[in-house]
Image (cartoon, rainbow, N blue to C red; front, side, top):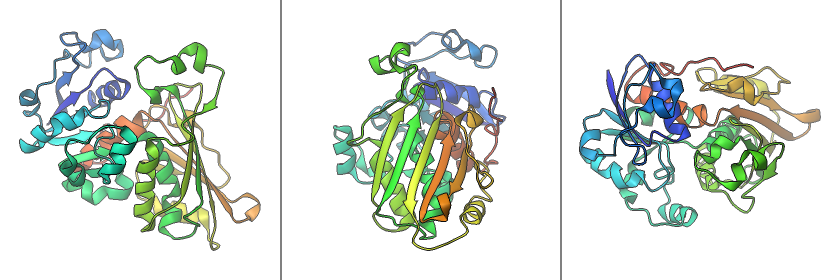
Length: 342
């Protein structure tokens, strides 16, 4: 059994980790931390876990966490970098769901997160946790930086086109919509029911923190710098991301076959039949990215539709997918769930 610790068990990604790991057949949940809720039974805060998780929240302690085989960090940015060096030195494998180790360019990270990075050497060591892009490196990694939610939907949608060199890489447009859970569990005015319900709005048009992460991945696929316009939107739903991706063809190709072949062996990418329009509700609670590719009027514009559950394939499910790869397990183990409908 894999002994697992979770730092930051009270947020949405933390409780999603608990929900999925509690029924993982190769996992033993050992430690769940929360400074604010230390001593409280987990099931008191999240009653859906009654009968499945019997632990109480504890204050984070590196010595206790070092007894685990792997530790997940489901924390705000800058929290993981304070504890990860100690765990790495003790030989613990770490899977970080925050943005602390996603970017290789440290000055760029410091610019977007407006704070010094305290362990840049570990950012260099970290493997970016998008399995469809870095599976072999993830197998051997000691530190994995799980891909973000918007970056997962956007990168998977553009991946076949950039790898095949079929589109103009300098004029990519990603129009993405997210449910309010993407903002986290912390109370804020913009995510109140009376503010977010029956409303949709763009935000961070001048620049979103996920933009450099998305560019970094697309640059890796293309082999050179790409040009990307990324506009996120807040929508009145709890879970889900819908990314509509635009690009211009440089040469003709059978796009449907291209996508089907690229993702044929990917257990968590579903390329839908030609003409499909994937829905966010079709991936709710599931570790799946559903994709459809369109070429309107057979012109030179390609439109890719990509949907994920931001808390599962966009966060906690993908983190467990990385864990399965790291420990040599079937990649689907514990996360091969069918989406919930209605």
